[in-house]
Amino acid sequence: MSSSPQKRAVRKAPAERAAEIAEAARELALERGLPAITLRRVAARAGVASGLVAHYQPNMDALVAATFTAIVAAETDEVAGMLDRLPSPLDRLAFLLDTLLDGSRLDVTAIWVDAWTLGRRNEALAVCVRERMDAWQGVLQGVVEAGIAAGEFETSDTASVAWQILGMIDGLNAQSLVRWDGVNDRGTHLARAVEGMVGAARGSLRQQRSPEG
Image (cartoon, rainbow, N blue to C red; front, side, top):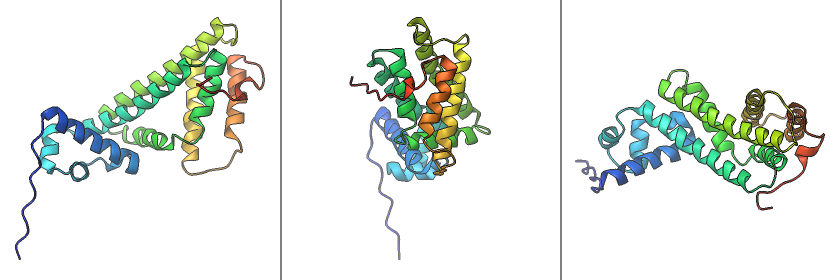
């Protein structure tokens, strides 16, 4: 019995086809993790031949790196935009801690965990991971520096403080992926630690704040 011929992909403009392939990789990453980004899986998701994917993305390590950057940069930009709508650095830091630990971003957390692992052998990905970690540190450092200028915070090394806060958030979110309950109410413990690091009043970072006002 003869097999039916493979349906040829509809011809599209190069930019449109490249965008479809990038979107297919993004969907796979969010659903199944960065390791799911393979030539065959991306082609199947995009509904095209593997050779066409290889034409647009000849280096799969680079596609993994670009996919990681697209996903996490979108989150950073989204959160930074929310922070801009809050009236004070104290409000911004409190909201930042809340929103990054509220469990709604675990799909992106999983992408980070994948990237830290795969980045050991994928240098293109490792470069992107370092760049995006720098971006998050910059967001945190900017909030802390604004708090010092406003008289709300007091610390002598804003870069180190931002790095430590970022490390604690990353660690707590990574633990939440396996639903570990070794510590109850992670948010309260994190807020207390951060209050001490930035010299904020006890309990000031656990007040509920919203970017809508």
